[in-house]
Length: 147
Ligand SMILES: [Zn+2]
Image (cartoon, rainbow, N blue to C red):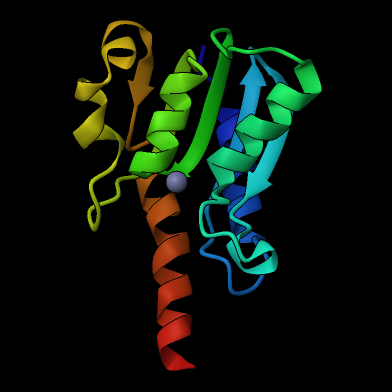
């Protein structure tokens, strides 16, 4: 089930993302219980795959000591990249809710049909609060360009 207040938390978290990081946020929840909240963390770690979804999923698995997240929902401000899409498929996330579509790079909507599991079982809804999520990214890149 989709909880708007959790998505709003993801938006607020992205708005307050660490400087220099592309402001993307992910929240993993089971029903309305929030398990993990994360932003991109590629600069501080020097690891370009430390995307918000990756961190939120890893923290959730660590926290719950489980292998699969079939009961969980992930709320993300940006459509997951291919790497994160594969991760979400591997851990069998039950519900994927994302905001902005990633129009620059191949991403979830383009590759999920190739994942048998995702095609069959997962609920995917994109474009949630799309304008708000897009604005966070547009503002960030505008600011970067001015620097
Ligand atoms: Zn990613």
